[in-house]
Image 1 (spheres, one colour):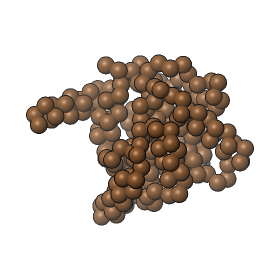
Image 2 (image 1 turned 30 degrees about the vertical axis):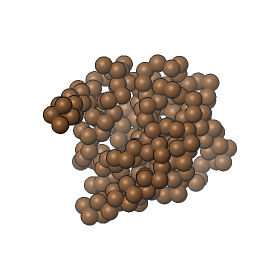
Image 3 (image 1 turned 90 degrees about the vertical axis):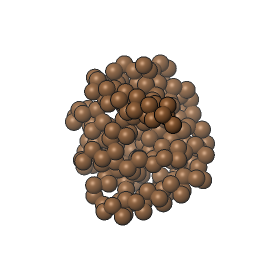
Image 4 (image 1 turned 120 degrees about the vertical axis):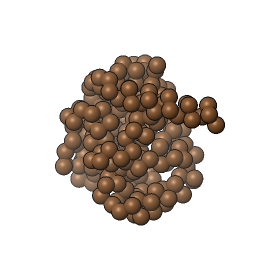
Length: 214
């Protein structure tokens, strides 16, 4: 038990240190052939358009303009790679579920995402962001199915918990946990977050830090 607590404390401190280091944009990728060579371990952020992916990345790194944010859903239209302290790559994936995007563009995104998920041995986990006000939607379940089929470990992050009451947050949390039991690649632990109040950010930093090179 003591060893377990010591490990958690060490991971927590490592996460705090890691996210005070430089995080810089490397490249945006729209085509399969432009994907970076395998190297540093990677974690990726996925979610519906306007779920708050860019805000989450900015909040984690403390750089308010690192990832582009917009009130217009679907602005992130490529895989954006960021290097954190030259120890870990953070990947901001294109938002999905934006119905007004051209079908040809959606098809191109899907092809890129499927290739990335199936052929990226350096990808250690996908953090799937879900708006806590709405819970899992059909297109979220489709993404989870894709991740299950690709055998990519993924973990659910509930966002915008500052915008709902505690009992509502607890309810959507439990509903999400129950659904995850049917998905083989899903991590069973769900993290509740808010980019505005910083709720859950230290926890998420520690979760991410376990994959970084030391």
